[in-house]
Amino acid sequence: MKKFRFKLETVLNVKEKREEQLKHELLRLNGLKQEQEKILKETKDKRAYIVNEKCGESAGRTDVQTLLFYDQHIEVLLSKIDNTMEKIGELERRVETKRAEVVEASREKKVYEKLKEKQFEVFRKMVIFNEQQVLDEVAVSKYNRKEQHNY
Image (cartoon, rainbow, N blue to C red):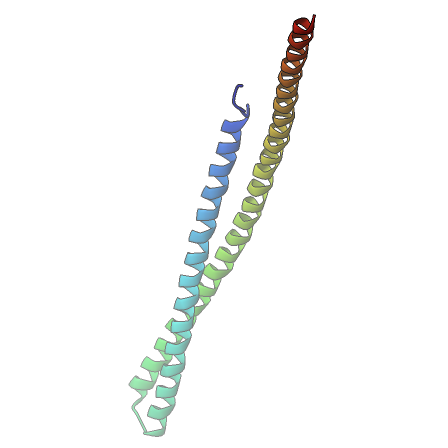
């Protein structure tokens, strides 16, 4: 009996590889987003620290130059916070797009898997039918030989 061979196996393999590739890209984008969120948290923490230090310095009658330095440093940190938040927003949009692509690729792959399952079921029924025919033939020939010996 011949083996089952799915004619669209190569297409199914391509769909599976595409889905895996998209999943890896999604993971990479999520990793980049997490890195940016970490940078954002660190920058906010640093800004809070600088603000507290500035408040402490201003109570101790520090010179104007030091206070200006703190103000400039806070401005730089605020700019970095804004840039990081923009990067996070862009990465979130890219993650959502990639997630939709992964879902679509998964859907396409499942279509081919279902088709393969259906074709395999048809093949299996055909094998059972052929085996039953062979068994019927054997039973008929056995019966005919037995009948011939009885005469």
